[in-house]
Length: 380
Figure 1 (cartoon, rainbow, N blue to C red):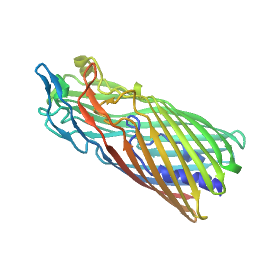
Figure 2 (figure 1 turned 180 degrees about the horizontal axis):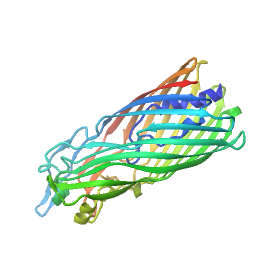
Figure 3 (figure 1 turned 90 degrees about the vertical axis):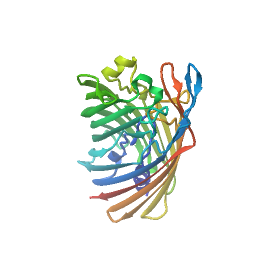
Figure 4 (figure 1 turned 135 degrees about the vertical axis):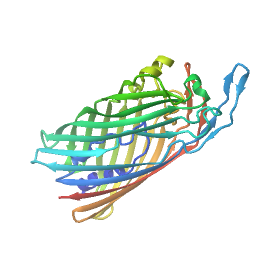
């Protein structure tokens, strides 16, 4: 019974998605490779953020000038889809193939760019990763896993509002590009007590985007290319049975968002800086799962991510840390399993900034997000 709950308690939580450090959406999880036997799944999740705030006064030669602008629903709702297939080749080697949206952004400030600090600013970015993982059991207790990831991404960023001064109305289009990376890790398990400690390193993935830049609809010259690295990260996943049918689980994820830079050639030449500045993130989760009957299991967890060293953030990622609670459940009927979950997230207060040195342009507080998801699985 403990082996079954370790596979399903986390699955119910994995059916939800929400914003985290940087533009993280799926946390690059590798738990699919630890499913028993041959297994397939499809998943769906929906996140409804409530992110908004208001302008702070602009400092001018005549003194502070306030626009009084308010921003509602800066972060748009988004939907994510995923799939996974896992197969045991023999009693030592297994492999898995999965697909999911690992990073993304749907930010858009309403308001007149000529009468608000940030009105017209937007960042729309989509990525989708295909991941192949192989796992080899060295012993009953120790295994190694490694794999390759293919990530397809594109995006469009617009800077709007008085806070951007001479680059108010700047727009860059990053055309679709595929990048490649790898993952490597290991796990220690004691099956009798459902204990598992797994560590996975995910490499950065470099994208070389064909780039088109303009200001106010006027091209800034011949299009070039822009290199963008998604962050390297480390995931530590832990679980152990603490009583019959009861599982304690947790995770720690570190991602190096400080190395995520978007600096198109023309924009960097005009401003001397890039478009986005983010802080590294560390996200913690702890939870408990319980098997109530042979077929029904449920879980709950708490998630915490510390904010940056101050509350100044990029307008393209206008939150700073988070706390969240999740509820998940799974029901198995024969070889089929349906799991679902919900998550409520308190998003940390933040002040979107521009300029060098950084100057706060708006104040965002009291924001949150609601997420829910559904996963259908089948053991072959």
